[in-house]
Length: 52
Image (cartoon, rainbow, N blue to C red):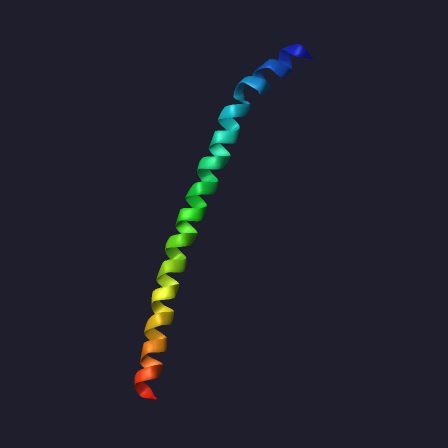
């Protein structure tokens, strides 16, 4: 039992770090997409104001 537990405890910080890095990457990627969507919304709203 102890022989299998020690490697798990040893690699646990690496596994957690990998998940955190992936999570931060996903947040950054989604933020960039959101910024582009916001720019498109602003352009559409500006065009609507010009046409009215």
